[in-house]
Image (cartoon, rainbow, N blue to C red; front, side, top):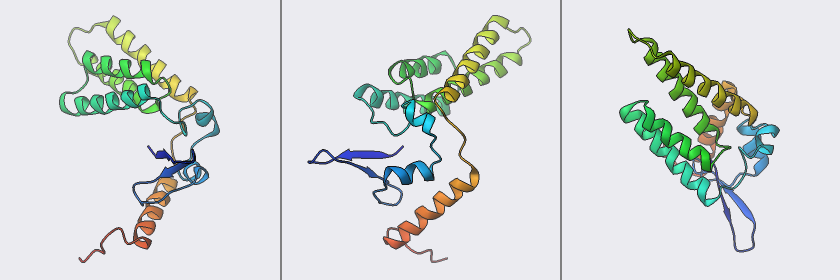
Length: 167
């Protein structure tokens, strides 16, 4: 997630907290391999409404709950509530699909399986994956991510943000 602030003149400025820089939209799009489709869908490069910002807080809650307690109906409730307010949030749909597939896998390990539950969760998984695709998401190539991390480290050094390694 990148932050954009609006100044007194009404101009938007991006803030990249890793390097302490102010990258242009074109740089973000190139470095993060953001597709035109995902921009058009509103999944990327769009300012968040207040409701979408709160939905991102719900996403953080869901991630924390998932880490602490695992997947269950409450986690899906959090995710689905957030999606209702931020229907173009790719990370929410990714979390939902991961949760659904984990619930299916857990149910498949049981001696007596609830096939209706398995079918329901698998359909929800497929639907979430279809939404991610519809929103224009594409996996970032690993070499592009490595180049991005390297450029951030170089930028930090130029700005004297990090201390040199003394090992």
